Length: 131
Image (tube, rainbow, N blue to C red; front, top):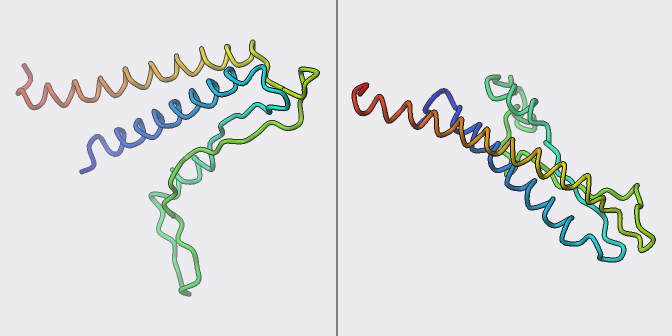
């Protein structure tokens, strides 16, 4: 069932991304004193390409041609930041930066939950007949 032209699915994927980012930030903060620990980050993996390719149909003239919209398990990827070093023990976690990213991610997550609650509120209003 495709409610709201896929908006629920998009919001769901965005919530998954925000949740995964929160886990990565928590892992970075919890390992702030771990020697040689390298901070991790999470990035979108061709999200725009996937979003734009969903409405396109590839003209496949050979069975080896790849279709445009391949399903992927996740819209994000976790990367390790190996090119920086903040502490003498090889650890590169910057707690100030992690806290700023955590606050930013919490605001993003809250905005997404507000939006999805609005969508379901609209659906509930329709089901009740507008009352």
